[in-house]
Amino acid sequence: MRILYVEDEKYLAEAVIHLLKKEKIAVDWVADGEEGLDLALKPNYDAIVLDIMLPKLSGLEILKIMRERGIKTPVIMLSALNEVEDKINGLEMGADDYLAKPFKTAELIARLNALVRRPPLMDAKVLNFEDLKFDLTNRTLNGVELTDKEAGIFEMLIKTPGSAVTKEQILAHVWGNESEFEENYVEVYISYLRKKLKSLKSRAEIKTIRNLGYKLVYV
Amino acid sequence: MRILYVEDEKYLAEAVIHLLKKEKIAVDWVADGEEGLDLALKPNYDAIVLDIMLPKLSGLEILKIMRERGIKTPVIMLSALNEVEDKINGLEMGADDYLAKPFKTAELIARLNALVRRPPLMDAKVLNFEDLKFDLTNRTLNGVELTDKEAGIFEMLIKTPGSAVTKEQILAHVWGNESEFEENYVEVYISYLRKKLKSLKSRAEIKTIRNLGYKLVYV
DNA sequence: TATTCAATTTAAAACAACCTTAAAAGCAAC
DNA sequence: GTTGCTTTTAAGGTTGTTTTAAATTGAATA
Image 1 (cartoon, rainbow over the protein chains, first blue to last red):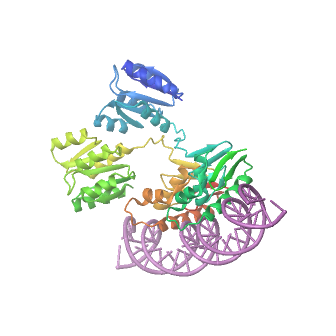
Image 2 (image 1 turned 90 degrees about the vertical axis):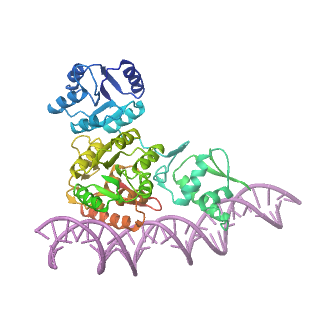
C-alpha cells in the first residue's frame, strides 16, 4: 500500500512514517498544502492522509479541489481535537474518514486498512497444533465440522498440548459441574474425536493416560 | 444505520423517529437515563443521540460513564437553546457533536450522516460472493428484492464469507437490543432467504452450524 | 494366564435445535 | 378505510446431537 501524507509537523510525521513502514505501508510525505495538492492529483496512491492546518493551502482546500477534479482516492482528514466543524466540513466535502489529533498510529493504520479494504483481519480465533488447525468461529478442525461437545473437549486438549486433561475437568468444563454426569460421556466423545482425527490423516492423536485423563500428542 | 435515542419528551421523540425512519435510520428509543445507559453500553449502535435533561441520569452522566468504559460510539448531545455550559461540558467529555433544541430533524440527519459516514469506498455499494451480487442501495440480490430484515441478515452473512455469524449477533444487529426478541425470528428469515437463494439457482447456500449460527458457503 | 477394572465402541432412544408454513398483526401507501 | 407488503406469532414436523446402555477390548496385577 502506498499513501500520501501531508503534514507540517515534522517530528510527528517522522514518528508516524516510521510506524507505517513497519506495517509495509509506503509513505510519501510532504509538508505544505501546495505540494500536497500536486501529488494528490496524481493517481499514485491507495489513500491520502491530510492534515487540515497546513501552510499555503489547507487540507480542506486540497480535498475540495481533488474531488472537483474527480479524484476519488480515499482521504482521511486529521485535525486538532474536538474541532467538530472541521470534521463535518471534511466529511461533507468527500473525506472518507476523520481522525482527531492526537491519534494513535495504530488507529490510523486500522483506518487505512479499512479504507483500502484489506480483509479486516478479524481476530481469527484459530488454534494450531502441529498439522492441526482448529477454527473456533466455524467449529471446524482442518475443515471437518465438530459438534458442540466435540469442540468443547478438543479446545481443552489443544490448548494444553503436551499435558493431560482429566475427565473431571472435561466434564466440568463441557457439561457443567452438576455432577450427575457420567465419565462415559467423555469416553464416547473421545472416541468420536479419534475417528475424526483419523479421517483427517493427522499425525496428531489423543493419548489416554489410565486413571488420569487424555492428552494431545504428535507421533 | 442504527442509533439509540434517549429523550424524555415523548411527542418530540415520536416526531423525530418518524422522520428518521424515512431516512432508513433504525431507532431504539428510551425515555430515561438509566435505560439509556444500559443500552448505550452495548455495542449495537452506529451513533447515540442524548438529551441532557433526563429523568434518573443526565445525558452528561451517561456520556461520562460510556467513555470511562471505553465505548467509542459517536454521541450527539441535545440541549435547550443557549446552554453554553452544557455544550462545553459535553464536548469535553467526549461528545462528537452538539445540537441545540429546538432543532430541525434534517439537521440531525445531516450530522448523523456526517458522524457515521463509514468509509464508503466510493460508490461501490455492492457486495459480491461467488455468483451473488448484493446491491445495498436498492437491496437486491441478483435482481430480486429483499425486505429490510432479509437484507440486514444477508449483509452480515456476505460480509464475513469465511466465518459463522451467531443468532445473537443477528438479533442484536437487525432487531436491536430490546431483548424480548426470539431466535425464531432469525430462523424464519433464514428460511425466506434460502427460498430466494434457491429461486436464483445460486450455488451459494446458507449453512447452519448447530448451536452456533449460520454462514454463507459455496457448494 | 486368569482376573479385574478401565477404557472403547456401537447403536438405539431421547432430546433439543432448527425448519417450515400459514395465519395474524402491523404498517405504509393509496 | 382499503390494499398490499412486511413482520411477528405459533405450531407441527424434521434433523442432528446427546444420552444411555450394553458388549468388547485392552492393560495391569497377581
